[in-house]
Length: 173
Length: 173
DNA sequence: AAATGGTCAAACCATATGGATAGACCGGAT
DNA sequence: ATCCGGTCTATCCATATGGTTTGACCATTT
Image (cartoon, rainbow over the protein chains, first blue to last red):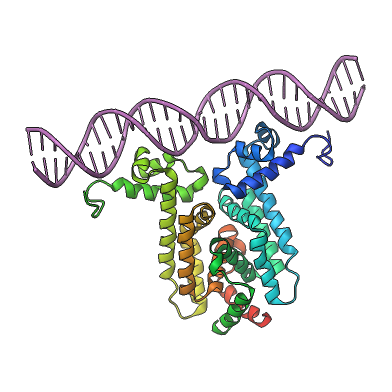
């Protein structure tokens, strides 16, 4: 059988498993996610994991890779904006509107330490991020702000604060 | 028995377990670390984990908290420096010299999503980081640079690059 | 209609895993 | 010398876990 639309005949489980894996990754984290969690989240027998992906780790890795790509797409949609402050605010908003995808990035970063495949995809994402944002520093800024917004949104800066601090920093360096 | 120097009589296992847990956290990550891994790394019976910490998760959490504090201390030692470029280069060097501690931060960030205790410590670390570095933006920059250096050191910027980009950014915002 | 190849789930299995139990050991107090 | 509280290990146990096997099901092909 040729793999056309995939959903046409069978193969539906494959997509469901990927979706279920992403959900588990976000809700339970890699460490606490079991094959049964994923299968249950996907409404599928857990045997399907072995059939479609070979192993739980392979499925989780694939899910992580897709999540990384999804965030990349989402951010690409936000970069265009000529006002720096609004541009940054739009990016900062993504920490809230797409929190799950950002959490997945964190999980991916941890796994990157052990999975060359994940590391490669994250590295690619970083290269694209540098292009889209115009440098390593804006990219670092985005990643760092994400960390602050995920961990302690009460004290995390908004777009206006970022711009103000950047201006003040400029006088010091 | 009073808990004096701890190492005087017994209790040595407690410290060993914490050290072993940190090692495992870095070498295997939380997800793949078992009680037996920790006990073996510490040269101790795995029953000692239950005795001293109650559960594996409690021990791992404690190890993470200590790692967060250790990195805080280490960074505090590096912030004093009047030349911005050298100051940043010193911080960037820590990604290499203390890579393990930085990896532990990542692991902590992931766990923070599920453990209020870890989240609270990381949040405190962030607040101290803002003070030491002089703002949310420098802190975000540091965290974001760490991500780039851990994932793809080939393309990560050095201190001079950071300063240069900051100056160029200043003209745009 | 029979055969085929691919998709899927129920049941099964070996083992890994976290935790509990029971008792040894050890130093200090009585 | 005996007792005692605290520390530590060997062993045990229930179960959670990842993966495999077996056969059903179904659309397509011959």
